Amino acid sequence: MDILQLLISGLANGCVYGLIALGFVLIYKATEAVNFAQGDFMMFGAFITIWLTNADYMGINFYLAVPLAILIMGILGYLLDMLVIRRMFGQPQIAVVILTIAIGFILRFIAGVIWGHEPHLLETPFAGKELKIGSLVLGFEEIAIIIVTLLLTLFLFLFFRKAKLGQAMQAASQNQLAAYYVGIPVKKVQSLIWALAGVVAAVAGALFASKGAIDPSTGLLGIKAFAAAVIGGFGSLPGALIGGLIIGVVEPFAAYYLPAGYSQVAPYAIMLLVLILRPAGLFSQMQNKKV
Amino acid sequence: MSKTPVLKIENLESYYGPIMAIRGVSLEVREGQIVTILGANGAGKTTLLKTISGVMTPAKGTIELNGENIQGQDADKIVKKGMVHVPEGREIFPLLSVKQNIAIGAYVRKDKASVKRDLEMVYSYFPILKERNNQQAGTLSGGQQQMLAIARGLMASPKVMLLDEPSLGLSPLLVQEIFTILKRLNKEQKVTMLLVEQNAKVALDVADYGYVMELGRIVMADDAKVLENSKDIQAFYLGVREENERGQRRYKQRKTWR
Image 1 (cartoon, each protein chain N blue to C red):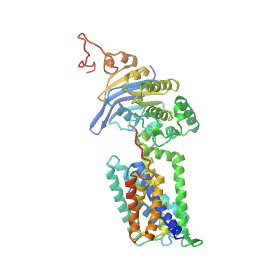
Image 2 (cartoon, each protein chain N blue to C red):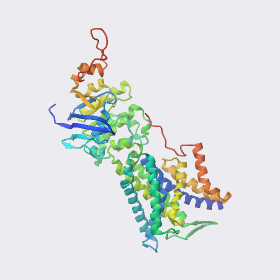
Image 3 (tube, rainbow over the protein chains, first blue to last red):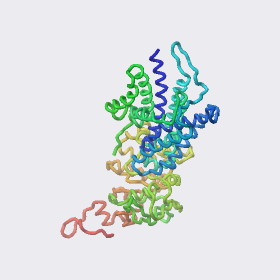
Image 4 (cartoon, helix red, strand yellow):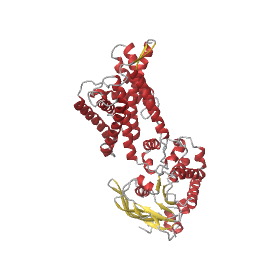
């Protein structure tokens, strides 16, 4: 039963990594820039959820607070693109990347000033509850994480498949110039993609904070999610999720079966392996553009 | 040709950074016409179209669409006003299906019933696209991608279509096919067209009026039939050989506008 236990807690972790990786990929596909602040978005979303929910702060009902936090992060993402990132239009990609690193630092600093540097835990209605199946003990949080991730994935899948806005987002990311030609308001759509990345980050943050304590430097695990996105093939949404799951599952197994320290290295070792054997990632959507 | 101009451009100037690509262009497109702009590589034809459709912002000059000034407006606003740009080089959405590519052409429209009608109309002109409905657009052949770009443009239900080198990289047979369809669209659907071409022969065949562009300026403007018979156009764009008294081709002789 050890294996199953490890597997499920690994999957739950992996879901959070996967969601952060999803944010990376969303923004990369739309703007061809890597948002290194994605992990800090997640941290910030978690803190906003905690701030709204926990009895020490606002103490709003959990089921009301989470959508509110998601909304706030969505607006934050939109404004960030509209007011900051868009000004970099026409500058080299590296400038945008460095800017996102700076935004990550700023978010970390703001969170530290407002909420302090000691770890916080989100007070959820299902905290501490467990589901026992034989010798298998599952935390309610873990089950919730997996279910919410599945639902969010399904929602995103349908959104990009069916919704007009989802199609416009895909179009704008595949061929920006052509998107202008067909009358898609590309700038607005890009801001909405940043908003979506904020929403996904808020969900990931709320899930993460319900499972483990969070402090302003938690956002640094964004690097691990970055590895997940690379494993999945940067540019593929399902790839990002599966990359996250792989890393999430490998970590606890490496910690359990291998000498200490290996579990920290494992995600990056897998990333290197993937880069060597399949440089475009496991689920690459790369294709050569016809001239 | 007494109809009012739907598109009227005056003294348009446009820059690529420090380089002046459009040096004061004025032209008119009247309702129901096909107007062509001829010119060699680097003459500024594509830049002109990009400036008209709002992808680039002009430095000077005015663009009037149905009497309304539209210069400097965002591309999506201009599409809503009924002018759509079919870009050169088959700028399609490679990972979306053919159907999705066509559907997204109607992005600015709200009226679902008329969109559906137009979809049938588009398929009737391009039956091959209906066959390839669910295929990824990036896997289409060059000619089919060009048709897809035109079909996508039609879905915006444009009054004016800006076409940038629809013949680029296509076989002579396909070029004929596409231009036949363009002519039919012009006649049957009353789409006014501003057509940029290097292939002067096919362009002048379908066009009512033509402009010749060189180095960012209009150097000649006349009815398409007149242009087709002009010595300069024949020598420099249609490749007609004209021998002088000594039996040599004229290479150094000056064009009338220089």
